[in-house]
Length: 355
Image (cartoon, rainbow, N blue to C red; front, side):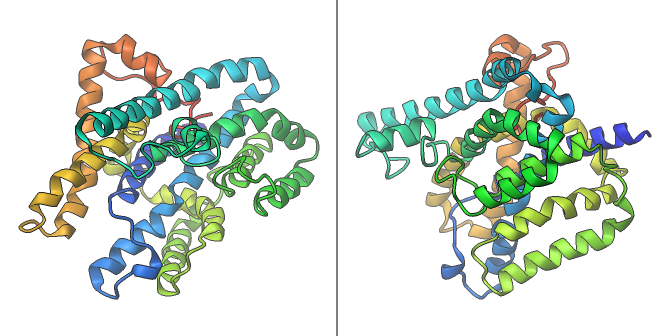
């Protein structure tokens, strides 16, 4: 297999694996380190939710930067804006505003509140939950798409530095975003440096399989770093998130040639739909579980919920692709082939990986 084919397969594999990790990350309730109980299940849950899968977004961001600058679309800002408007902005608006409409209907019609932010107290609150203005939108995982849209606007500037003064650009990006000098331009400060480094790998044509021989040390280093985060109750994981993509990428070489790795790559086409649609369904599983919690232990729910949610969304995707491929393609920003019931994952979106 050529290097290019290996990279393509690894991106596809990591896309679905990371999206599953995002779903697991969001299984309620969130328990911060300050409230963490010192017992085996709580520690295992914290290890995965507060450390290991906190690195999903940086990995997807790195891939997004690599694919975008490899395509050189940043050098055509008009085409870039048009493409990203279709593949990121439209899905963001559709899946966020749909959930907002449902939340308002439940609040005013049945007196049920999906969040304490419904209804918002002021205009700023409305702008946040509807469009992610300076805070998380109501469909909270979509803050990734919100930040990615900002990075797409910055991509021509990043591209200028990447091709003319890459190391100066790297220092500037780190200095500005890691010190939060951008204020609320990005909700996640780590995304800009990681996105830029993905672009650097593309523009400088790094050999992306050169460090595969260090796959085991990379995996062990990542897992030990996550263990240290939990053991020391480190709430700020920014440095782990910066380093993690460069450990996870070579470590993924261990999985890529396996049957499971190839299956993950084939499942990549469902990634974006799972990403944009999982939060409401995950909330529904939590609401359904609460009355059953007297009989069903929480660890059983926690383990099963991400598999149930991902499995149901894959089935829903297949049904929509079969019966309304045009509608599905429109809201996802990609072409859906009704005959194959699939459709290319929107590689231009963050969807998570896009270019």
